[in-house]
Amino acid sequence: MKLNIALLAGDGIGPEVIDQAVKVCDAIAEKYDHQISWKPALTGAAAIDAVGEPYPDETHEICVNADAVLFGAIGHPRFDNDPSAKVRPEQGLLKMRQKLGLFANVRPTFTFPSLIDKSPLKRERIQGTDLVFLRELTGGVYFGKRGREDNGNTAYDTCTYTREEVRRLAKKGFELAMTRSKKLCCVDKANVLETSRLWRETVQAMEKDYPEVEVAYEFVDAVAMRLVQWPNSYDVLITENLFGDILTDEASVISGSMGLMPSASLGIKTKLYEPIHGSYPQAAGKNSANPLATVLSAAMMFEGFDLKEEAQAIREAVNRSLEEGVVTEDLSEVGKSYKTSEVGDWLAKNV
Image (tube, rainbow, N blue to C red; front, side):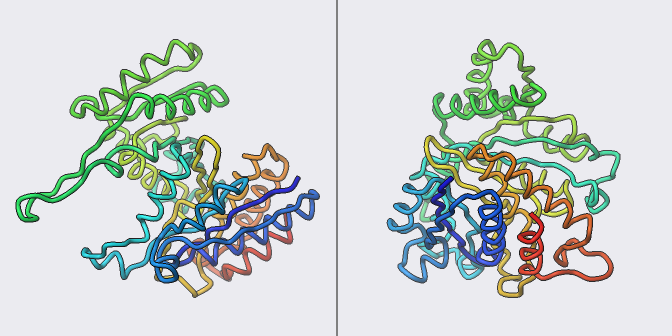
């Protein structure tokens, strides 16, 4: 198969972890007789520095014409620490999601047997955890009207959803639940928020189309609590943008490290794959960042092309690297830790 992949390394550790995913993908392509054409493009702070825009039109064209996008991370502390900055790297991320129509973020959370005691939660609470969040990505408070009034002393951010935005995300959730344990949880705050009541009534109306799926409705604060008490009681969860942003980061530490969890963002045509961790600028250039989340995101990419054997080969290599201790310093307790590039080399050799 010929694959045309847009490569958006981004900021911070993004270029380092992306390089390792490319090594592994190229090794898979050679093993399974595929051809991958990588199309690098600028985004985030790197793009602001180069052209003054965090998601340039040229980058968008490369993404639109690609079969998929492999993405690193966005963000830089010089923007985080400047509240007056008019242009920010994160604006590029929101613009990319909106222009590419990436409305559904798929974030799995699972445990690795060899790392189960690395989790901050007790073994007996997390054993068997295998859940997936579907977070709506292009609506809600992140895309609503915002501004300042009263000479800048009053600020507002508006959360807005349409029924169609809820329906298309929920449809993905129902379909995913049908391939798994047929359990779906809709996460909202319907006791307070009108947008959450729209979410709940829309999902309730869809239940008849998926009679085999058992649907639960839970408030976001209750889910936040249960995620650290009984995470393995969940399977597929659907929720709005802000709630999903917070809950998926909470869920990510169940595995023991944010550096282990991949994700996919799905649109009508384009699919984007990225690790869930941020740009981690403190580690940039040190060759110490954990590349496994990015490599596992590449596995999700192959699965998105229905190349399941290739995806499984990557996952098996990652599991072996963890079992044999070929890991970066964040996962190493005693003995040798490996550099980012060394982990990538090992994985490419062992897929």
